[in-house]
Length: 189
Image (tube, rainbow, N blue to C red; front, side, top):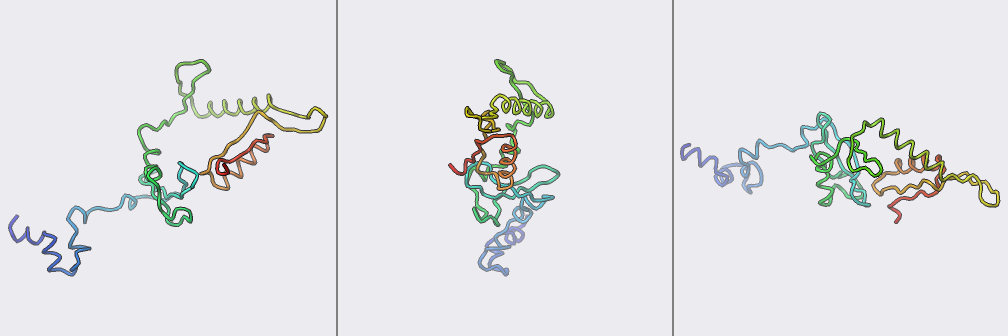
């Protein structure tokens, strides 16, 4: 590279001889920075979500490409966080895509010492069986005076603060239909 080429690539020279007198645009841009593009530019779609960490409920934009999460950012349309995320929320992509994330159902039998993998269908059947068993064991048809109760004390629900209104509505309906009366949400604590 000759002196002339080197001079033309020098940002100060570009600033003094070009249209960018303040050096805030093209004059300050290197060849590498000129070729960079945002991680979100290649995304196929944006999915709206809520940060999973605390009770604030900051909205997130999840950028997806080929059904894989490529970036998670704060949603500027959120009245709660206005696009800002705390350090944990900013790192939530690692929670979803990190190599430490368990992607299979693991089960350890009572008194067992080893985890075993289960297929999702088997695990869901086990959960349903346990819910129905707990409901049956805790069922109260009437109280000691014969008043009709039709409830179970064998189930309870404690929802998380990052659940939205629709999810809380469905959880409340499910547990009420099961006869549970102890239904609470962590956001109220």
